[in-house]
Length: 235
Image (cartoon, rainbow, N blue to C red; front, side):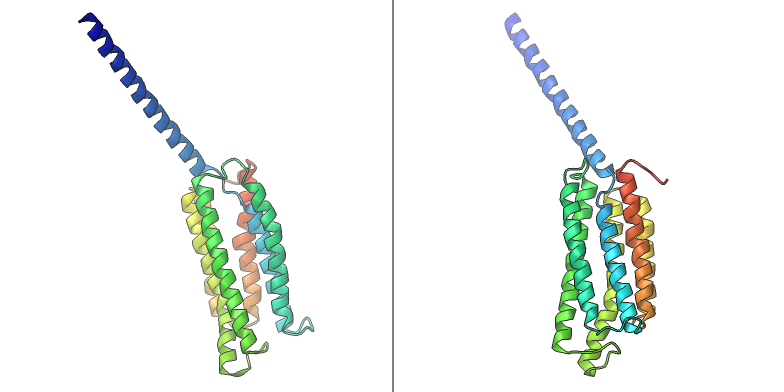
């Protein structure tokens, strides 16, 4: 009887130990998940690289449209493909390096990365499709070239506000996933830029407004993200 009691006691102790370990493991998992969720967002360099490339392409486009640069309208897509292609190559290097950074596998950075990849794919397919449609129906800078040419020109004019809308949504999702409410301010700036570029669609000034919008809604938050990733804060 004493032996049976001892066995029951040992079994109870073992069961209690297993429960305690399970509780400790669950607590540790929650702590790690929360730490990953609150880890600073990475990829600020990519925001800056793409923001500067897009802003530069918009300024070149504006200069060609207003005849400040005496270049063929075909220089516009050439400059866009050259600048965004360079941005893609440079940002790829930064993206590969950021994967080894502490917090890279956290919820916030994982969700943010997935959202921005989808956003980039959408904008890339949209732009390439418009360009291919333009090749099939040539038009010049003043949107002449027939009814189809005018529709293609309108598509390019609306691509800019659509881009700002995508930026705003991606930033809002990143802010929620990483618990970074400060990023929501730049989401609102992107929505404001979207509205401004809709109002000015088809006018040369749209390109200038868009360039300013890209600087404030991509480059600036990118710089702030870089500072926070380095342990600096602007709060």
